[in-house]
Length: 286
Ligand code: IPD
Ligand code: CA
Image (tube, rainbow, N blue to C red; front, top):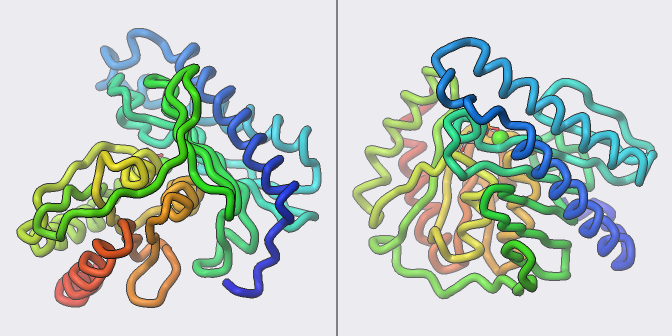
């Protein structure tokens, strides 16, 4: 990670501003154009198609805006259609994080936009340098840039600097986590949870990894762990958490990756990461 070139402070401010601008615009799109009866039709395959269409439309909007503003940058999104980079920056976007919540009309979904350096397709070879996560229903906007701190703005209010609170001990910690879509992965995750849950206050499965990780920065969750996250699920929220003073890693010395991410304030992370690591070792492979 140390070899990665970080843009200068002026560029970082511009990347953060652009991430906020496009995330807000895509957030408006997915709310304004979400069919009011989408949840009613959720057992029909057309409902899933509508979600897929909205995912793609949100991503297309993000790509169009980002390429217009910074033509040489790369682009990696959850949906089809990446772009190679000529600059040191790649935009890593999740056009709707929390798609099942979006389908059901549960107001916990987000647009996540991050500018990263390095190769986001190679675990451990990249890091976010600026980013934004917006919940377009509640109007919560989290944003951060490397070395510039993390902020939370609610609606039209002023942005407040996020400084992660002193955490409770592990036994009083409320943890966010999530489950993948693949049946084998879910079985593995459930087995892991059996080992971890007795050591925590409780868990929440809110349904948007990006919002969960930002919630740790804001203090509405104490910690977070999940296996199977993709770069777009975590890129912007990773920076929000670390810029608030939190720690976000993989297991042991590893960078956050698909195998596991663990996020919390430093003292709680020091308790949670070994617990999750021991549980992973005991559960074994998927
Ligand atoms: C999912 C959500 C969910 C997490 C899954 C992700 P999606 O993203 O973030 O909370 O548990 O691992 O895949 O599919 O809603 O964009
Ligand atoms: Ca996602």
